[in-house]
Image 1 (cartoon, rainbow, N blue to C red):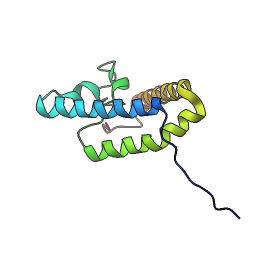
Image 2 (cartoon, rainbow, N blue to C red; image 1 turned 120 degrees about the horizontal axis):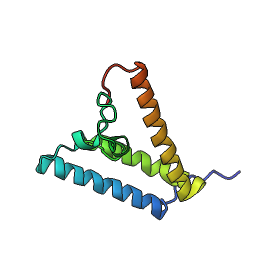
Image 3 (cartoon, helix red, strand yellow; image 1 turned 180 degrees about the vertical axis):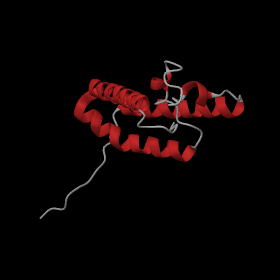
Image 4 (cartoon, rainbow, N blue to C red; image 1 turned 45 degrees about the horizontal axis):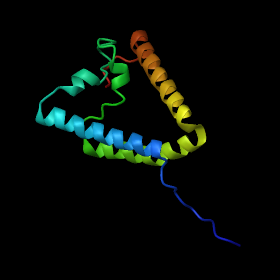
Length: 124
């Protein structure tokens, strides 16, 4: 009886590029917010109380990671483990399609929740 071999293959280049780009975005966010005082949270993060006040916010809030390095590390770690198998299963176009479905679902569900009164508190 042979013992099972568990291995984790290195991520494909597309997954590496996404992780590197997200890490670079985080570093840029920290530099712009902390050193220059630019209010990125007000510009990029989607605040449910201001429903569609800035039309780009439903898209850019996925890219805004905040200034907490621990949360960013956990997000990147989760992507490191889940993105490569998803890319191997669905391909690059499949990853884009999944990201688009998630984006549309979150925006529609969030807008419906706010308009119907299901959510009364601002939850960024």
